Image (cartoon, rainbow, N blue to C red; front, side, top):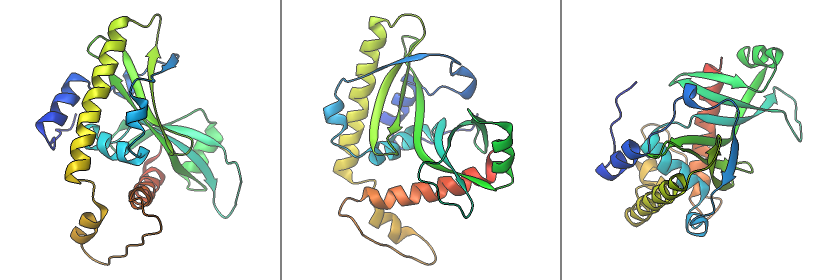
Length: 220
């Protein structure tokens, strides 16, 4: 496992207390129960803000839901597939056929990320998933249920959410996710378009473009 350089002690504590699951730790079959605790406060921040914060703590998400885009063909409702990260540069393609997988490998079909997901281990032994839904426009959190949900799982999930909100307040106050600052530090040709007052549009385009290129080159 690669060494992680944490940007702060607080983020390191979150990672160690609530570590991410690896691909082989995710259960094959499970149910979920949505977590509503503090969702009103969580939704005060854009879903892309949460992506940047979680990526800052946990690196890349474990799963990406992707539209399967056929070259030179426009489809209103394309098929989707789940890409699960095996290692930093390797992905497993789920819930699709071998035929589609071969077309992805040949780049006849290109996976375009529309949602992302992390799986987080609670100290109590439970698991929660946190990610985006509705094409990266809404944040969701849920308990991963295998058997019976324990009261301690619920308490630990609330603690995890509380720590994330504390970090979100710090990030917002310090403006560490500042696209203009990132733009100024970028080498080479610089292009910046502001088409919406909310800065998430910039980081959304940056994220989607990078992930699309990454997945096209490394999907297996």
